[in-house]
Amino acid sequence: MTVIKPFKGVRPAPELVEKIAALPYDVYNSNEARDIVKGNPLSFLQIDRGETLLEEGVGIYDDKVYTAAANKLKEMITNKQFIQDNKDVYYIYELERLGKVQRGIVGLVQAKDYEKGIIKKHENTREIKENDRIRHIDALKAHTGPIFLTYKNTKTIQKISDDLIASAEVIFEFVSDDDVRHKGYIIKDAQKLDKVSEFSELIDTLYIADGHHRAASAAKIAKKYNYKGECADFLAVIFPDEELHILDYNRVVEDLNGLSVDEFITKVNSSFELVEMNEQVSPKEKATFGMYLDNKWYLLKFKKYEEVKNDPVASLDVAILQEYLLNPILSIKDARTSDRIGFVGGIRGLGELEKRVAKDMKIAFSLKPTSIHELIDVSDADLLMPPKSTWFEPKLRSGLFIHLI
Image 1 (cartoon, rainbow, N blue to C red):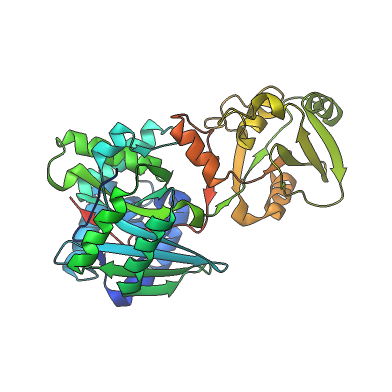
Image 2: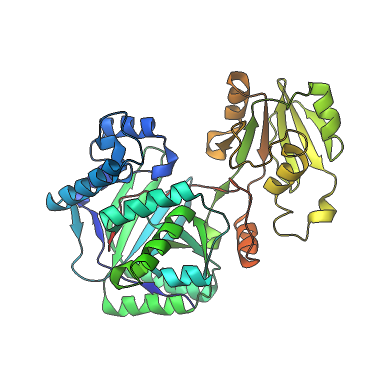
C-alpha cells in the first residue's frame, strides 16, 4: 500500500492565486521565463527560475540563481503574498479542459516508497536537470511543484474520492490563459483526514505521470538528510488514471541524413507501407504514423507489428518510429541528445508540423498518443519509455501548493 500524508501547506493569498500560478519551470527557456516575469512580477516563475530575478548573462546554474529564488520565496511569505495553513491538511486540485475534469489529492508521499519502487517511474533522468532541482530544493528548503502521480482507479476508491470532494472547502478558482479552469479545495476535518488514509491503503502502486526529475531530486535530498523530518517526504498530486488526458508528442527532423527524397522513401518502404494522403494525418490506430515531406502527407503503416506487440516498450509507437525509422534511416541514435530532432506537443496541432518543415526542418512525423495504460504497463514491467513519449494536458500549475522542509 502507499502512504499519503497531510501537511501545513504554503499557498498564495486568495486574491493573488491567478497572478502567482505558473506553468512548470521546464516548459520555458530562460528568455521566455524572463519575458513572463517582466509582464507579471508575481509569477511563480521568478521562484522556479531564479535567473529571472538577476541581470541577463548570469548562468542558469549559478549559485546566485538559487539564492535569489530562496530570498524571493521568503520575501513573499513575509509579505503575506503566500500564507501557510496552521495545521496538517490535504488539498484537492481540480483541472477542467474542454469539458473534461481531473481531480487529484494533494499531499506528501514517502521518498522511501520511490526508492522501493512503490512509486514507479517510466523515464530516465538527466544528471544536469536533477542537480538543478536538488540545488533548488536545498536552497529554498521547499518543494515548490508537486510531482504528478496516478493510480489504477476502482469504484471503491472513486467513492471515497467523491465523498472527500463533496465535503471539501473551495480555496481558489480561476481560468488560466489557455482556457483551463483550476480549482483548489482544502480537507481539514479530522474524519475526512482519516478518509484519505483509507483511500491510500487501497492503492498498491503510484505511477509518475510527469515530474521525474523533481521526484528523483526530492528522493536524493531525503537521503542526504537521512530521511529526517519533512525531508523524508515530497509533494505530490495524485489523479485517477481514467481522468488523465495524454496528447500526441510529434517529431520533426532537420534533414534526411544525406538521402534524396526518393532514396529515403525506398528505405522507409522496407518496414512501412506508405499511402499518400490529401489531408493532414492524425493516426487513430496503433503502429500507424503521419509523415509530412515535400508538402505532402503520407500515412505510414508498420509492417512488423506482430513481432513486437507483446513487448510493453517495443510495441509503443514512439519506440517503433525510433527503432525502425529514426535510428536506422535518419541516424537519430539517441533522441534525447541529438540536436537534429525536435519535439512538438500535440497541443500545438498538426499545422505546427507544417510550419516547422517550412521554417527549419525537412520532415515531420505525427503519432497516436501514448495511452495511460501503456505507461502503467511499462512501469509495472520496471522498464523505461523512449524520451518524449507523453504530453499531458492540461499542465499543472506551480506555486499553488508548497511544502516547506
